Each structure stands twice: as C-alpha cells, then as structure tokens.
Length: 306
Length: 262
Image (cartoon, rainbow over all chains, first blue to last red; front, top):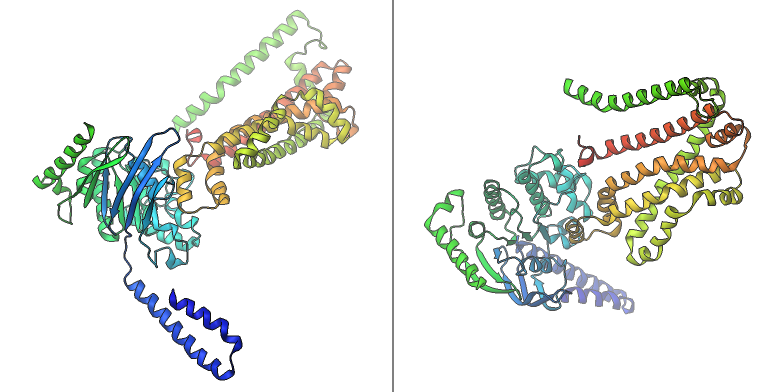
C-alpha cells in the first residue's frame, strides 16, 4: 500500500519538473513498479486454500426477542474442518448465516483473514465467491440441467459460458457425477441431488465452505458415502469448513474439531479437538478411538440439555 | 405402447360419449315434442347451419379469433410485466395491487359501451375489452409465483452477489412459470368471452363482423340455429386457445415440473 501511495505522489509532481528530473522520475517509477510486482508475486506464493474466521462477541437477537446467538467468540483456523453441534434452536444455523453475511449481528464483528488472491480473483471477479453455502436440502434449480446447476455460481459472478461449464464439469467429476451432466434434478435420487449441490458449492474453489446439516435428510448409507466424499474433497482442496450437524458420528468422522452449543441464549459449552488420523476411511467408524470421541461429544450434548 | 394407447382412449373416449349421448337425447326430444326451431334447434339443425351459413360464420370466427388472440397476448405480456413490477417492491405492491382488482370486479357489460365510445367501434375496442377481462388472472397468478420463491435459493443468489435483474430472470421468473401458465389457461378462455361481449355492443360493422355481432343479428331474425352454431364456434375457439396454452406449458415444463410429468 505504501508503495502505491509513493507512485501516486510522483505521478502528481511530474508537471513541475524539468526534462532531466523527468528522466530521473521515470527510473524511480520503473523501480517502484518492479517492487510492486515482486510484492504481489510473494503474496501469491503464500496463498492458502482456506481462510481463517474470527467471530468476536457476536450477538443476534430476532424481532420476536429470541436471542439466537449471545456474545459468541469463535476462532477457526485456515483450512480447519469444524463441526458445530447442539439441539435445535441453539443458533447453529444463525451462526452460519452470520458468517456468510446473509444476516447481520446486532453486536460484535466477524473477520475473515484477508487474502490477496482468491480463486475468483484469478478470473478477475469479485471476492464474494470466497464463501460457499450448502443448505439442508439440495435446493437446485429444477429447470436447469445438472451441469448448468453446478455452473450457476460462476454464471452469477460473471464468468464466460465455456469457462464456467468446464469448471462445473470438473467439479461434478470430483463428486462422481461426471456422467449425469445433462440430467435434470427431478430425475436424480436425493443423494445425487446433494452431490450436485456440493459440486455447485466447490465450483468457485471457495476458501470457506459453510454447510447447514447438508446430509440430514438422506438415508444412513448414502450419508456415510457422502461424508467420505466430503472428507476426501476437503483433504484435496483444503478449504475451511464449518459443518452444522445433529449427528455425533458424522461430526467425529468429518471434523478436526467440534464445538457444542446450547440454546436460549446460543452459547458454546464445549470445544474439543478430534484426535483421529488425517486419513479416514469407512473402517475408522469401528475403532475404539472413534467410539471414544463420539462419546465425548455425546456427553457434552447431554450436559447442555440439563 | 399398448398401455399408452389405452391411456389415451381412456382420456378421450368418456367426454366424446357424453357429447354423443347428450346430442342424441336433445335431437330425440326436439323431434318428439316438435319444438319450433326458433325456440330450440335440434343438434342436426345446428350442424346444418354450420354448413349452410359458413360463408357468414367462418369469417366472423376469424375476426373474433384475431381479436381474442391479440387481447390474450396483450394481457399475457402486460400481466406478467405488471406482476413483475408489483413483486419488486412492497410499497408499489401496496399502492397498486388493490387497483388491479378493478380488472376482476369491473362489470364488463357496463364498461364495454364506454370502450366502444372512447376507442371507436372496431378491433381496438374489442381487444381492449378482451384484455381487461382476461388480465387479472395473469397478474394474480404470476404474483403468487414470483413471491413464492424458495428463501434458500434467494440466499444463494445473494451469496454470489446476483443483481436484481439476474435474480428476476434466472430465479423468480422461471420459478413462477407453473403459476404463470395457470393464469394464462384461465385468461385464454376469458379473452374469448371478453371479445364476444364487446362485439355484442359494437353493432353492425359490415364485413368485419365477429361472432358476437352475428349472434345479435341472428337473434334479431329468429335464426336460433345460427346463434347456436356461432356459440359453438366461440366455445371451440376458447377451447383451442386453452389447449394451445396447455401444449406450450407441456413443452416448457415437462423436463422439470410435476404438473406436466404424467
């Protein structure tokens, strides 16, 4: 920033200088320009796939007087997978909406660590695409094919048709739907629809993925498959994930860290690391360590009830 | 294949049987009781009129169809436009929507002579009348469709910073299509009624006389069989327009909407 200011200053004074100093200034400007380019280059080398989120003293009170979230503090590291648990009405969904800027808190601030180069910026687009949201239901546009559904976010931020279709095709292949591109949502099973929703979320290469009980409406087998797919996707892409769920086993399987919230007013009562190996396959659900972690979250949930 | 055929016959056969039975009963009754033709023409007399008075009736059908189609197209375009404007702002909706009810409640028989008076007797006054009669269902249904967009999808569009224009064209309008077609189905029939009512009051127009004008003159001369023939043609016109909207709805919605899935 300092460098850019200098640049501006020298540009302004140019009118009052002789031809000799003109030449001098030209060299100076050239130097500044090179410095500027170098600085940006070093930033892009430090680029991370995830972004840190910091929630400070956030309170959200609804018009009917219910305090959904009360003076909440939360620090999520870049690239972390955080599960958020708690009974209905404890403000989990509200918290996600606040982080996504879909809702405004009455008090407090939510920071996202600044990053110079996002996936969207590489295409010269806005920074909003850094955040993606997956809802409880797939919420696809029924009049669009699978491919055009997955390409929607890129379309909305103004990417060209051929580019966004290519990106959507790749995202769909990542969730195993490479052969369903031209089908329509009502021709798909619930699990497939949710995978399209997931592809739509990752198509912008977001740095922060917010998921609000995404697999809750699916049957157990489908849900476990999707959990495995999501975990794999996260290991590969490395974005930060905030994952709201009611299921303790889902939280343990997916997350590196879990928080448990209580309702009225919404507060965090437990914040724990999940101590399992980085690589998690379906077999891990049968291990003793998995059971122990599940039990720990379950006990925290029970504490919150009383 | 055979299953599909059976379904088609099951659909088409019952109404045709009802039509034949009613026509035969009517024919028998008229012949048996010797009902005079100016009171109640037998179905055979109506068919004969369709054949013999064709030179007068079919051009009339053409004029009525043209007026109804223009009126219908106008109410479709204007109705969707007005509903979109109303859905854009709560203030505009509160200020304007009550007045759109005027189209629904206006006694068209009373207002039609005024239209003829203001716009001169002819195609313009007739189409405007058709438009007034048929626009309200389009506005009301489109508005319902536009306002029942899923909140989560609106959130999704907000998340990616979609402009209001993109929100309308890529989310609200497509989502409202099933409701819009419901409105258009109702408007299709109403536009024919509006046209015929207006024609009633336009009076004799020489060559350009629509079905409504033919009905009035036929009543005057006691040609009840021709009245029935004209009424039949007007109903068939309404049915054809209704069917055309259905076909359009089918091809637009069949890939994704439950109402056209069968």
